[in-house]
Image (cartoon, rainbow, N blue to C red; front, side):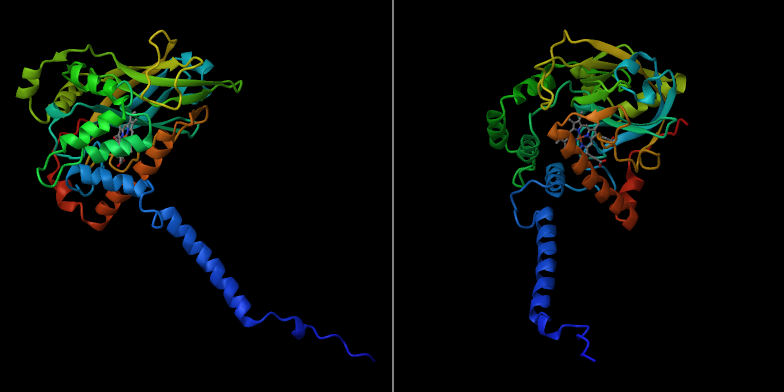
Length: 370
Ligand code: HEM
């Protein structure tokens, strides 16, 4: 009987060094990929971590447990009530004539949870809506009608230009001037910050989504849109003298007083883009003549402290969207999503590790109106 061929062809076996080399190559490739993604190989590349580092530096100090931007605020709760007019624009259930409850947050711009309301130029509203078909819509809107700059990189440069100089404790005017010179679109924002009237309340302020989004209706038709929450509470101008005299926590005090009397309402007004309107650049306003459609109302019923309320652990990532709403492709939206996540992880780590304990205990107190 002829010999059976050996089960293993020992002549064809690869040398051990080759296997080790293959393992080392795979491990090296993985390590390289991690290092590249983390930005260790390219110290100048803008990563979400570096953006949050720059924001923290700009704040002058880190406030453990708090949002790294818009650090001062309060939680709110209520519902969004669709009026049916939005159904032609988007298939989201929230635009039907139903109520979708939300947890939200009113805040002011700035990195300190102890900042003064009467010095805060930017006011904000953030919402996490939940519909009865299991969808979520998170949004974070500001009182400015357009973004200050046209790109993520420019906003990073602005953050760095505004950081306090260690020698003076104040931003370096030369760096700020160089930034403004390099970004002519910033002029429009600076004019808004200087001249737009301040209102006396969070309740009478308009909040703008600023970035463009895309609505898709049931027929699959898409439209580029922006939206604003317009207050039903009449606008009352706050003069510079009134501002000077106001309490540093006047916004939350005013909100509590108003909610003790009644709920507050804003209309959600959607603006439809036309050909040629800037979709990928939130620093470019669209012409006022665009079609505006009111699709429902935001109704705020109660407020609670941000340190204990349900909004504390929400990341109002603007790309958490329901069916029928999509991002527009504006790179600022993707950057916001990535940067908010890093900010969220840092503050949640502070809270979980106990680093935030004392700070959270010292946060501005507020009566729970629930
Ligand atoms: C590249 C541009 C931007 C960056 C890097 C940025 C960064 C941040 C960061 C780090 C936070 C804190 C997030 C957290 O800890 O949960 C935040 C909050 C916020 N941002 Fe932005 N932001 C950008 C653009 C915008 C724009 C265009 C708007 C307005 C439409 C906006 C509105 C808000 C609001 C309202 C909050 C507070 C949300 C809350 O109450 O939790 N941001 N931002």
